[in-house]
Length: 533
Image 1 (tube, rainbow, N blue to C red):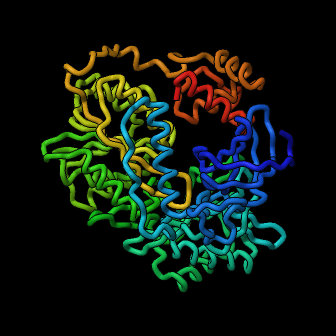
Image 2 (tube, rainbow, N blue to C red; image 1 turned 90 degrees about the vertical axis):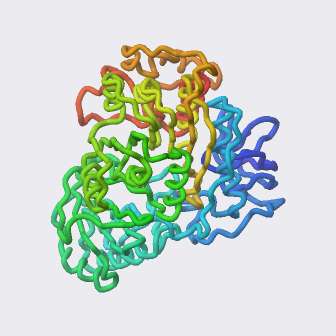
Image 3 (cartoon, rainbow, N blue to C red; image 1 turned 90 degrees about the horizontal axis):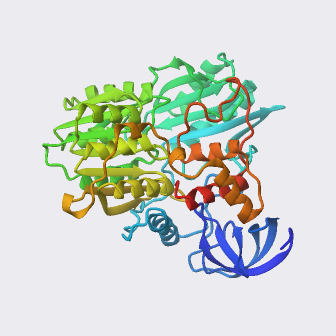
């Protein structure tokens, strides 16, 4: 099969990111924007030895689940991937996505529950991170094309709140008038749905932004509930959005939102769920799975600004929240005071270190709630959780693959999964949040596993395949060579922590090549083969 060749095929299934899989004599072609069951004439855009990428040249048989996307730049902007599917098809895709990894990676026979859907699946995002490009008097604000640094200029984003879109248009007009945006990198706009308060963060290479006072005044005339404006200084050359230094130029540097009667301070850097409507459903599911009686000690790992902790506090004896981001802990402490809650403690620490310390002190929580980043829990944290022997674990995940990897470890060490509930926090995209209920098995139902405290210092890379074994697997199967650096980058993405001396650069500011997407997919496949993810 060659580039620009045309073939006719039917979509059989989906990749994890919503691309259709069309097979021609067993040869897979990955095609964006096609729905399972649809037949199409497909143009090959990129061909590899064992797979290809294609585009729909003509739909020959159209699915009943196909709808017209509402967004005018859908297919160009990389923000949404599923707007061509109706709600039923989107929910089926997301449930099956979770089911696939639970069956294939975690090796669990349990059936995943239907997805908790959102009634109105647009205008749900309370945060916009918008790249800015100002050249020769032209101002672009929008989102990146798929696998590109090119900005798709947009007037409004249909999954962002209307307030964010409104404020963005005011800023965009002023950037054209004042011609003062040459040093801007991004705009960060946060909107508290319940209170209406808004925050604007100008992420700039220089602290001084000419005519900023006039711009703030203009925003206030259009949206009077603008609460605070911040300039974040970022002179880095990579794609990290927020810099370390920031300056409050208007207001007090935070906004306040409310969920189910609880109030929350939100600063520029603190993590806060981006869909407040579905967040309530998510946290209600956490409470249901925790099934607290008021007598339990609960450990909340990766607690962020303390949203889950405060929800738990109303039904627990004591809640301890752990978070590594100092700004988030500062917000969490404010949130405790704001809500007059006295049975919650917050500790600024990485989850692994704190969990390991609790093991040494033999301090056992009754319930652990864990809501890790996309890479999932690292091995030290998982082993410490197992060693603490809580009766229940509630696992909240934004990545089904790393969730399944961690469930496998927990289920091999004394826990069983009772229920798996996906929640659609991100309609129109391939992302899905999942809540899992685990309980400790009756001692008669499993074989005890002894975990030596020294094992807590092992890394996943030391207990699984070597770099050379991964290289050999990929070369033998695909005739493709990959470097140790690329393997390390992909392992890091999936939460496999390397020892201190692995893959270190010679200087802090040295640049490393980034693993190409094609090779990343092959390395990820090898990691799955060796059961490392």
